[in-house]
Length: 360
Image (tube, rainbow, N blue to C red; front, side):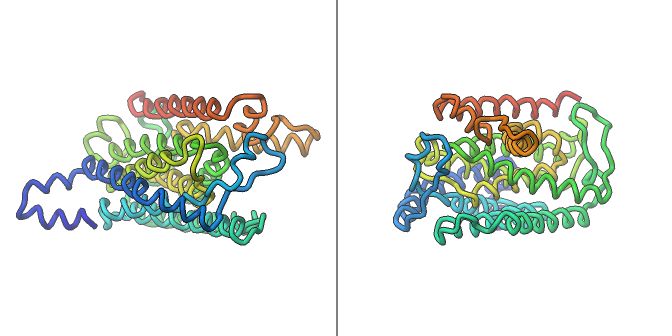
């Protein structure tokens, strides 16, 4: 939106040409999203408290969580709004990837909003219900997968890149649709499972989004992609703007979500963040690297699967409680220790993922 305006004005005012640069618009996206959170965050927290839209806690959960009962939640609506608005302001709206990402982010956010609303306002502990929720997620994931497949303009856009190898790319054909669906839906739910402690999910999400923004920039740049030995994908660079908006929204939300949290994001935030990260990874062809950089999300999800499987198969639980962060809490780790150590692991994994750009 503003990109088009500044392009017109730059004909008469050459100093406005700076807004044509992706990196500068990326910085503007970060600052815009942060500014929206700082401006409207306190007001939203007051409104959520006023309407008593507060957190509920499982009775069998860690005892330290009982003090969180009533803490305002559904704050993820502010994350979602700031991401979308910052992207609309600073991205090239003629870019199909931007619309694919916005569609995915908004639809998954809407699913989370309905689920949160039914649980917290209508006091229905089932929310949407697991089956209905998964069906809606699956439908949205399928739509974006088919869109990306049918609008692909080069073979590289539907190949699976293998990290560490320059010339290894697996043609997927219609398998691309299946992979995209799995990555988008899987990442969305993985982030949602991780969102169980103050700030635990938002910081890894910010790190992964920032790293994927780097991948988007070099993938959409002819010279950089050739130098790094990765396929060039026309238009992928514009995805950097959305990644920047996500980083800004995440950091702005962390201001209020850090321990002890003033507000929680709820499903509306976790589902939309996860889906957004998943579709970005698909666009820049880094699904495998996403599994590395988002290792915390993967481990948290696997811990739930193992917990359920072990209980059903042998009648015993593998962990004291799942997801994994609750296991460490019940072992006696203070919540801030769990959070910060998970952040540190996420940072290490993010750096490993970025290193694959050069190690080929």
